[in-house]
Structures are given as structure tokens and as C-alpha cells.
Image 1: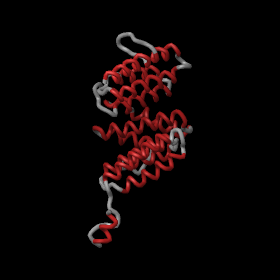
Image 2: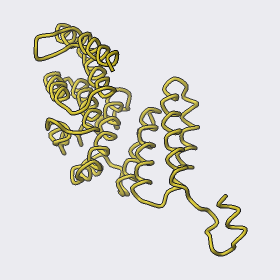
Image 3: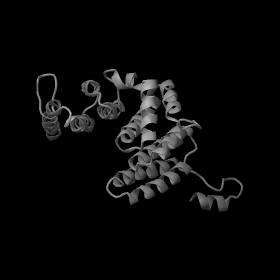
Image 4: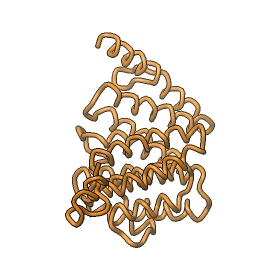
Length: 251
């Protein structure tokens, strides 16, 4: 339609007219594709193409930054960590994609912008510590220890809104991979006090399962407690699933 308008009234409309609604739809389709890529990596290429199309539809910098952060998640799942860093830096308006530069910039942000940038950075770090090469692992761990974003309110303060749930899930995994199991358990404890129910409860369940898996060899007793315990203050995965199932059935 925009093409027809350009032909009908030449000079009034630009050659390419963006549609925010189409951009959002493409962004949603792109997210579906990169989740499908976890089972079939061929789908990652389709997701990249959709991301490039979506970015072209937007004029607002915040919309473009959001699409770049979707791309960070895609490249993280695709294990292309250099590209993930590049797009995260791009979403923050940075020319340098060094881990320290990214972490220091995130530390200066406020509100939801900080929360979502931190979520993407920690997810990237969790995957790097699992499958990244030595250079990537050393780079992330150095920035993680130096900037100490894990002490931020998004990681510790009670009654924080989403994306604090996802942030703490990734942070618990990072502590687990670094062998800081007490810190991982502390993060899981703070996750229990966040706002939100329903589908967000699955994030807490997933966090418990992932930390339990990381502790299985070194501390099986602690891992089993994460999976099955009810001491009045903590619930294991088994109890959380039962509670969630009861709520969804009643709802």
C-alpha cells in the first residue's frame, strides 16, 4: 500500500515507509523462529532475516534497540557469542563490544531499560560460561567480578517487577557455573519474593532445576533439596509444580 501511495503522489512519500505494527509482528515471529532454532539450528537463519526486516520498519531508537536485543538472544542461543556482544553493544549505543564496556554502561542505566539490558547480558554470560571458548569465558567473568552488577537492585531487591525473574534465573546459573553454590541458593531465595504468578512461576521452577543440575555432582544432598523439600519456608521443584498445577486448575 505504501508503494502505491509513493507512485500515486510522487515526492510526497519516501521510497520506503515503515510500519510499527508490521515491525512488531516481525519481531514476534522472529522470536518464535529462534526458539524453534533450539531444536533445528537452520531456523536461526530465518530468524536473522526476520530481525533485519523488522529493524527497517522502525524510526524510534527505543524500538530499534529492542529489536537488537532480540537479536542478542538469538545469537546467544545460536552460540555466536561475538555477534551477541556486538548487537548488545549496538542496542546500548556503544561502539565497543568489550564485556567491561557493556557492563559499565548497563550499571549507569535506570528502570526497565537497565533491567532488560541486564537480562540479556546475564543470559549471554550464562551460555558463555557453559559453551564459550576460554577468551569469551575470561572476558565475561572479569567484567562480572569487576562491575559487580550482581549486587544491583534488579538482582537482590524484593518485590521487583519483570524482568527481575529472568535476571535472577540467569544469575543463579552463573553462580552455579562459577562454583558459588551459596550465592546461587541466595539468588533462588530472592526469586521467591518477586511479584507475579502464573507463567512467571515457571521461571522459578526452571531456576531450581538448573541449579540442582549444576550441584548434582559436587553436592547431591543440596541438589535433592532443591528438587523435593517443604520446610515451611522453601519449596522444591516437586512442591512448586504441585502448587502451580493446583492454581492453573482452579483458574
